[in-house]
Length: 508
Image (tube, rainbow, N blue to C red; front, side, top):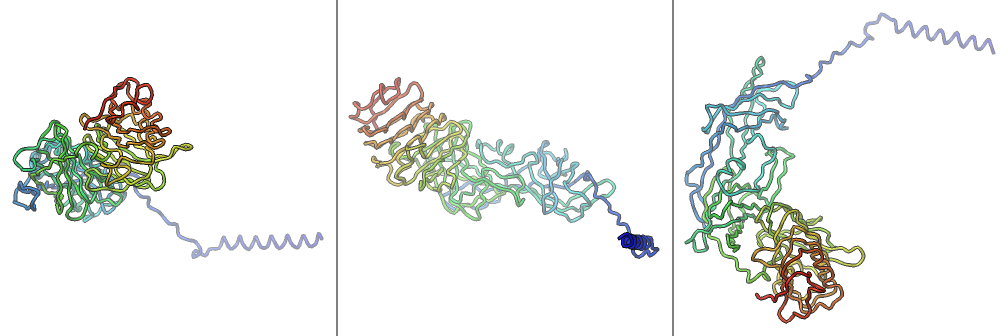
């Protein structure tokens, strides 16, 4: 055994010696040359960019009625540079962000063209080449373009709703001074500017309104948009535009951006200082971005034949969101801002942002809107800010014949529960027209609605179990309950009407 172990050790030593000699060989071809990696710069270069920039004047349409086609008459709406204006610039097809921004030369203030310049840092490393694309966005101090909250004046448009873009390329780069010279750029307006002149239906008198809502059938009227106009990840939100002037007027300047390709059907709804509603609609209208229009609109008065013919309506008092959620399976619900273009609720319900004066109409065909058993499952309407509520609640049950419908076998269980932002309109009523209430019909419907002070209920039979259980619990201390004629015996402040409310007969 010892002899075998000695032989084994001699073999190992010999093998190690051979390996050592091989590694010490003078054969240079076996040695790989060392690779030297030049690191990328750790900080981007500060450049100074200069470009001659022209503001594209808006081609203006002549004053015409929307009852005939609009045509260009050669007028322009001039735009000039302001001393505080800022333009952002982006590089290449990836729209690499540049910190800093470009300002107009003092000699160009008040003029349509000027030299823009500024120190900028592109969010890229390495060299910038001539011919690379440059994207210019005005104004440079906004991450989002908003078309909501307009007041209808040209001054407000100029300060808050003037958006423009332009494209150019790198013309030259000074490697010593790092000055980039760009080819001239023209900044074009990215929306249409429309001056609406409102008249009565005959066109003889001015119609002064406190609210004007503009909607489009294609539902691509932009409310908000990211300032990266053509960036692949940029998104838009769509919906009606409501204009609220500081005082009632018949002339409103509005910025509109419609992303539907081609012509669209526009619907205008307005409310005058007395609360009367007006409406106008017209198909095959195109408001092109970069153009200005002045149009005369003859608005027709809307006769609702009383609130019973009005679908359930939520009208924003303050800017906020109306949401409708918690549906039972199979619930049908549509919503509209103009009662012409209706849209089906989404999978998760409805969530609509409203400006003051903007209205949301609701309708559907449903045998019931909820259940009361167990924990309950029910449609729920919530407002994040104060909203007027009026119209006929039966539009949620029968979308076409609600104005004459007085029977129902389902429930409105907890429909508005704890909606503290619900308010009564000054001249419009919320109508509950069912005559014989089924079980649990209005169970907790207005529970905790502390802002309500007036309800019209036309029921004449409330004997069914739970039909008015806690329906007004937690509402405001004082108010008026309007009942149907001949139904005085079934209503009492001791049992089913808030204790300090007054009960009166409803007279249409």
